[in-house]
Image (cartoon, rainbow, N blue to C red; front, side, top):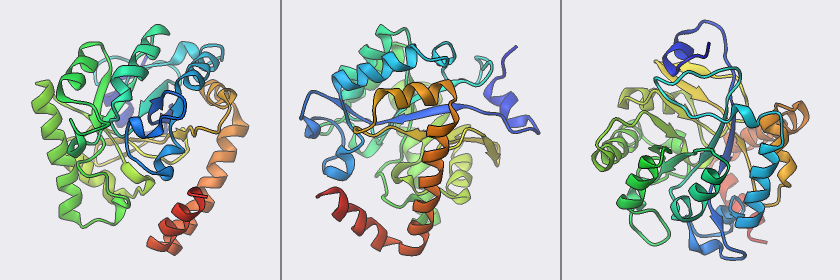
Length: 275
């Protein structure tokens, strides 16, 4: 028998989930069409045909049967595979959701609420339609702070609570999930999310073991970038050790650089990815 979110939060033993973090999916070369602009954002965007090949790799992997939806009522069995999509770019509705549905899957779409209805981002009507089609809608904050773990406590609380309220107003139902923008996570970020009433929070830390912070289940994710071959998604979904270990190792090194460099780290990163 599977376990619900409530069960997993309450357990004393670490439980595992394999979560893949995607962003936008666009037509060839049209990286400005959906989501945030700039090469720093574009490196996370996949072209449509490439994304389909990633889904095919997942389908053909041992993880295909474990592609799941996060729910407070539906049970999870084994080690679930979650397909998540950050930012709330318009490709969520026009491209990603139809492709997922063609495989019989649903996704988790995390919306930057301050961008709703603006150029390149989903509208309220599109958010409602995604939910009606069975996808999970969650918060990605209001303003998408570049360094979420460094914003003042009051702003952090507002980023979560106000974005949650906006989505609940649009959907007419509770919104229980969120994802951390920008890759800067800390326990404080999870505490603020829990205070806002979120029950599950995805971050960008590449790990499969989940843990609970003040009653909020924290779930790591493995990032998929546009230069990654489809086999990576398939291998991670299957639970293969090497691609997960490699991403974890790189993340730990990057985490040290973030802590040491602060804003300077971000400036260096932007310089490197723009070349």
